[in-house]
Image 1 (spheres, rainbow, N blue to C red):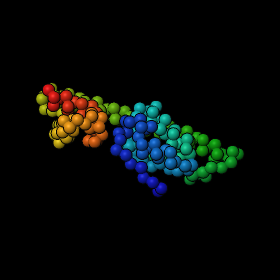
Image 2: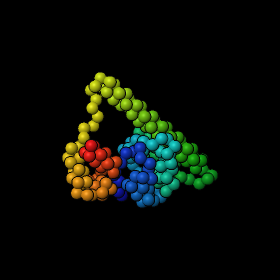
Image 3: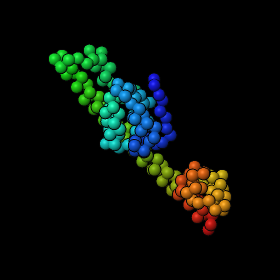
Image 4: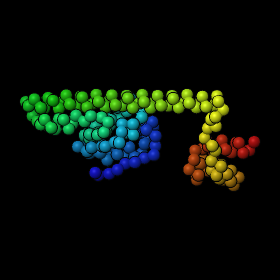
Length: 181
């Protein structure tokens, strides 16, 4: 193992906007292996975008290994690996690559569909709980709200307040508007 790349950004964020993932792709070299815990830990993007990520990794000459996706590379190596163009094993490597890509497409589609279904069920559950008056949503972070109000009272700009408190400008604006009314 050469490096471990971790980030706390949603897998639904486009991979170009994920700093650690972008760094991983930038660091990749020929024959490196990227190991992901599961396909949805690598990406939860729609299949087209997810396959662009996989292509970006493979275009560096790297391979991807995910426990839930059958690895054709190990099968290819067990029957002889790479050989000359006159050897039938060489033709098999193209077949194995195509099958591997098919497995990734399938895994990406299944992961995306599963994510969408879970999201839909969550929304249905929230709607039902709201209807029954059992759902109140996320409770406000009073400590953060008080800090925002203090910063703004002292004349700190919305942008700077957000940066200081490591929150979004929209949160600062919402809290400040609510406080002023």
